[in-house]
Image 1 (cartoon, rainbow, N blue to C red):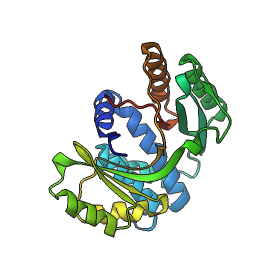
Image 2 (cartoon, helix red, strand yellow; image 1 turned 180 degrees about the vertical axis):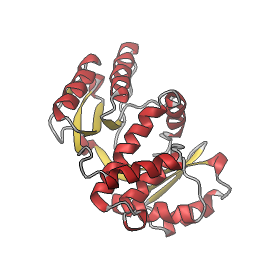
Image 3 (cartoon, rainbow, N blue to C red; image 1 turned 135 degrees about the vertical axis):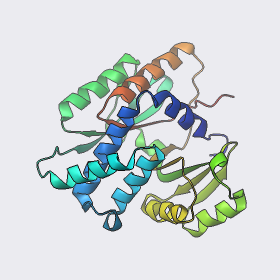
Length: 245
């Protein structure tokens, strides 16, 4: 992972998304609804809900908005049933793209995702066509500016809690876990008072693709922007190397 810190991108995304905070809150609101439906409204007995709440707080979602979302999902037996769907495909120059969606209308979502790929000169492939190029991991990003611990102390805390890997980047620390250990590690770091800029289960590319053509960069940004604007899309993963060299 060294040299591929995505924290700068996360910060850039958050700045870009300040105007689109409603989108982030919509995404997290759906995740809360699904977590409550699957495991109940009490975070103490629902680790998935605890993880979503942590993600909500990392994105500065107000506590009353979180509580409202939980109560709404718990109290409304007729609330919308969201279905988890994953799309895989290719952007320019073979860039691999994975799209996670939560939808109440599969046809609408499929059409929108296909359109986003097509407009960026890419195409949606069959399930599994690119996911083998990624590793599913729990990923916790810690902003150096927000954390008082030194690197060694933080690394020991993360590894003792069950993390698989720890990396120090220019402006952040990255903690990686197996998906099943993510909740345990996140909660241990939270209990130790360690602030997290991002904490989520993610897909990490095994290899990266560089785009040198301005036209290709324009095309992939078109696809990623369209996916970002779609309320059904929860997360987008890709192996385009956006780091400046």
